[in-house]
Amino acid sequence: MRGVFEEWVVLEHGPIESLADNQWHVRGALPPPLASGRRGMTVVRDEHGGLLLHNPVALDSAAMAELEALGEPRTLVVPGPAHRLDAANFKRRYPKAQLLCPTGAREHVATVVQVDGTYEDHASNGTASLSYLPGMKPAEGVLEVRSADGVTLVFNDILHNILERLPGVMGYLYGRFRIGVGKPTVHRGLGREWITDRAQFRAQLSRFAERGDLRRVIVAHGHPAVLTEPVPYLQAVIATL
View 1 (spheres, rainbow, N blue to C red):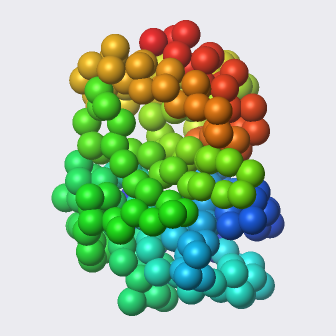
View 2 (view 1 turned 90 degrees about the vertical axis):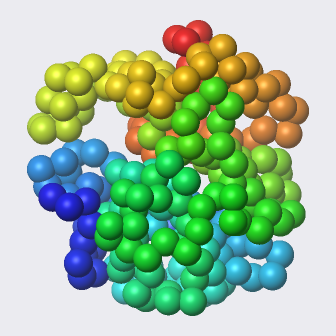
């Protein structure tokens, strides 16, 4: 699999759930044979009514109409090299939107979709900012969202919250490659590949956990993926480093 759909393909997905005054989240399935796995799209609306879509996921027509009623999609974020599945279709649907990815993922993402820039090119505003994590290669980063109730940190693959063994092929792959199941943790394979300074990485997670305004953490793969008690979650991850 090239890791990208050539046409609009709607897989099983849940409803668009409101997390805050300017933030929504929707969970969807991965394609077979990985269908037991889940992925998530975070939607952020800025003060000008523009939407940032972090890890775009194709939805059915009713859900897409609901999404577009929230605002105009202006920024598409492909948060890592393995999250290109619906990127090309979203770029075709919203050709004026700026498609961004981490600098370390650009070469991989650009093989399937036009990349307009990297996280460095995102115009940080009062609502959302994209940055990299100290002690880690720029293959991924973190989206910080500021809402009326506080701050949300949206990670991608590096942090996991898979608490039970997944069925089928996904369960086999997680066990075969010892990705990390049973507790909040760093993705073991990607951690070995991407984390260059574990002390720096650990220190950054500690700074996140100490923030008084931290309201939630979102990870790409987790049950749950939206963590409304972010400090215990981050502390549990830190304990594994």
